[in-house]
Length: 270
Image 1 (cartoon, rainbow, N blue to C red):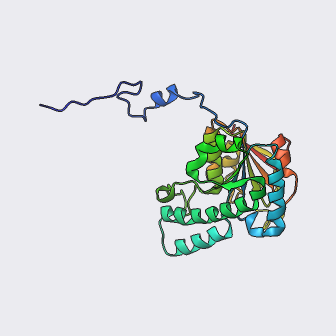
Image 2 (cartoon, helix red, strand yellow; image 1 turned 90 degrees about the vertical axis):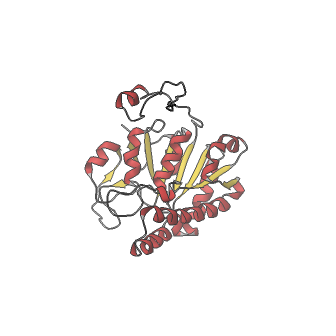
Image 3 (cartoon, rainbow, N blue to C red; image 1 turned 180 degrees about the vertical axis):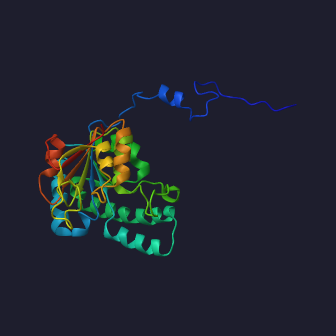
């Protein structure tokens, strides 16, 4: 007898899952927002952690105190050690997926250190597999800290240019905020926000207060203070309407961003 194909009854029965008409049918369908009052605060490794105790300890105190009033998930970047391991890996010809695996270990180390520094505020390092436990953990008074590198690992997509993984810690913070239905994503850097050029090497760079993701991509800047992939993903967000960039070396900027005040740079989804 000739074997027959059997389909489970569903609205997607017989679909290829790539047909545009099918995709449009579900466009705009509301998603569950697990933590609509959550604020994802991403601490840069290069811009914050690498500066040591003079910058990190006051920031930990500030975040710890804010966590008493705001629901927060702290996400850590990698920093100079990521650049070091990428330098070695690129020189040795490592594939992009391997580079992503190596870089993730560094932001994980920073997550451990940051969680310990936040321990008196109930800081606890969590893993990516623990994200769906956050509603319970936050209700228990935990201040969760997670590494920013998204867990693509060896399955990291190849970049448009070069071999450096395009999905790094800014992108990981965005993806965590998106799946949790967060209210805010705040990227804490060592500059006041987004400039047309790197202000440390180009003193005449112009500051950008407010811009849409599409406008920013159209500028095709040589350098940005956040990952291009994060900006590319923002217009498709179902939860976030903007990304906020603030200077973590200036006390009070995070609180202003949490309150919805104009501070730093706002990159809007639309």
